[in-house]
Length: 247
Image 1 (cartoon, rainbow, N blue to C red):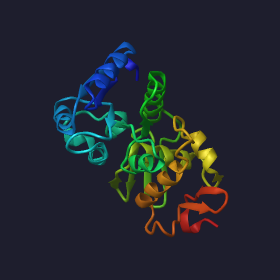
Image 2: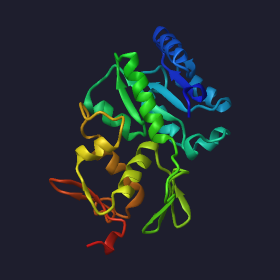
Image 3: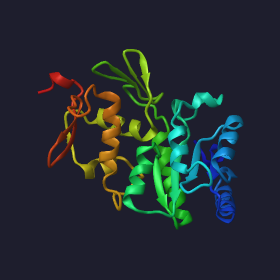
């Protein structure tokens, strides 16, 4: 997907910053539109397809974290063709609050990345490109993968359990795909961060743990005693596709 085809929605109540971002995104080939609050964002999504949302945390009315949580509902509800193999729009949270706990909360509600203000325009472009690259379906040998009762369609970015689709965010699917490509191997946090291109290790180095916790909730019967996605204490994580049969 080229920048000229990517629809970006900027949601920020700071009119000056919003206009600056729209101008910069437009100069770099993106089709960018801006709104000032959550109500305007929801109204825009009803009539316009969007690939990526730059979403400010501190908004009047409903805040950005609540909006991001709601955006993880199926994108088909908006009545548009689904980008990125059926996923909803990518979300990059923007916030003047840069504490680690705020970033973790942003990731937990389903954001693909979190960018503290102030940020450089070059960094913003790099983050956008990285998020979109991770979400772009890529043809590959072995489109269909299976583990336990699950079937994974790599190109469609879809996970199903016994024929019933399991909703995954883009970040959760990115982690699952890496695990499927590295079965029965211990991957350290550093290795996972490196494989999850586009994320920064500092200053929120709990990012991998957040992703693992969220994915476990989707694939494990008892997330506290996982069969597939196991913690190897002091080393990292191991994905055992045979589950309980794995020694």
